[in-house]
Image 1 (cartoon, rainbow, N blue to C red):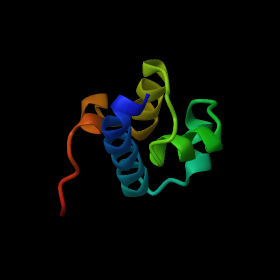
Image 2: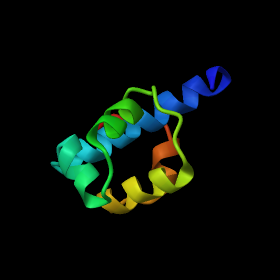
Image 3: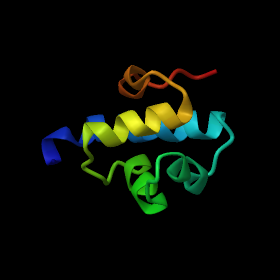
Image 4: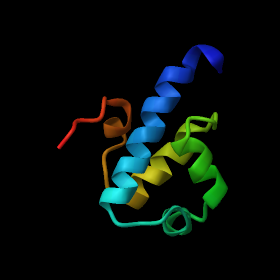
Length: 76
């Protein structure tokens, strides 16, 4: 996973930004797809090596296109 650290950090920051924009806590997001709050936390902090299906579930829970998680965050 070490060589992929940068992309996991970008994804994590994007998941967190979209979750906050949606006004959801980590637990509320996890509840949307029967996930675990600690897994959401690990993903947001770039610590979790996760399956694509988990990322797709998170995107569905947030109502965003999964592609947005791979793009650099734009400052508003």
